[in-house]
Length: 157
Image (cartoon, rainbow, N blue to C red; front, side, top):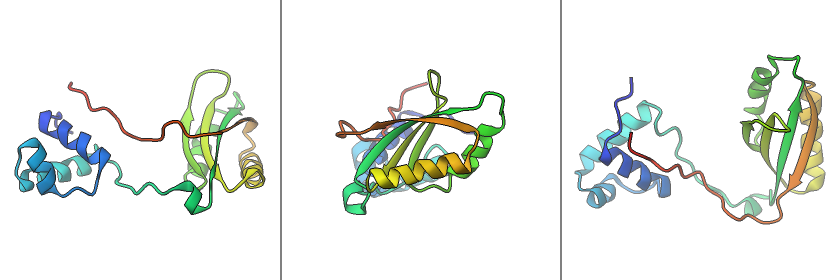
């Protein structure tokens, strides 16, 4: 079982979400702990799954996928195992950045990157052909990024 987060854990999480490359010594200087104490806490939080990934955010334009699309998908209601099959399939799709199971007029919302509209059309055609339980896709084209981030505020229990 995961032990509760204390004030030092929360401060460490705030810091590493902004820069996961900071050395334990630098983090310790900011929060008042030794480098070894910070390293132990980071190791525990990684092992407990509190820190689930440490990634580099790559500029989409330089990577060759400058366009972002928000796709709202409707799934067949009679097909209750459709979501599990879709999860397995979507894990292998690099252009599909994020997927959320939501309430409202659609069942799933996906964030998809592509080179252009033609490639997006190919991606959605693949989604529909590989996942017949998806009956409709509603698309919004992102005109401009207003805010991008994965920062999660860390609050006290």
